[in-house]
Image (cartoon, rainbow, N blue to C red; front, side):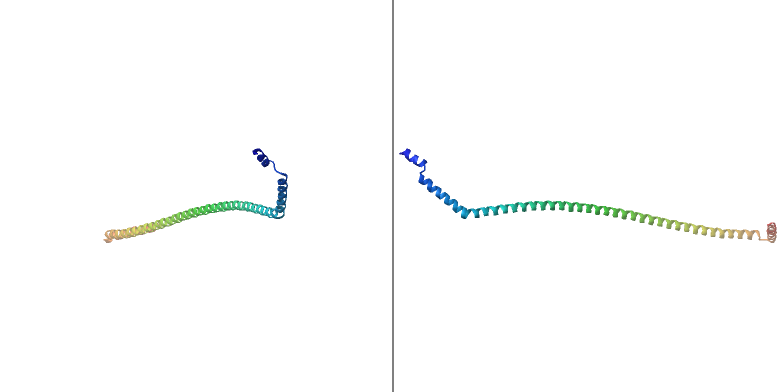
Length: 170
């Protein structure tokens, strides 16, 4: 019996195959009529959503690459502008230093020229004063000499005769 029970379990009966086939066909018909369209529609919607998400991710990646490139360009422009500003600042500083040196040199030259002029003027004034003093002293000395030389009448007459002779000769 054990063998018979095992054989009946292994070998299906004709009725079981018939009813299983009818159930399977009925199930396929019902699934085809009611379930396949919503399932296929859901799968298609899901596939479209996945495609949209992939395209959106690609667009986002492309946008990020464009933004990165734009950022690099902006950064390079900013660096170039910074370098230009620094160069201009250096040139301005150097120009200001050169101008200050030039002004200082001009001021020094002006002061030196003024000092030279002042020294020359003081020298000329001193020389003129010295000449005046020498002239006054010379006149005083000549006056004293003439007074002592011309103190008597004979000396005065001899001097006048000498001067007259010199005038006649000239």
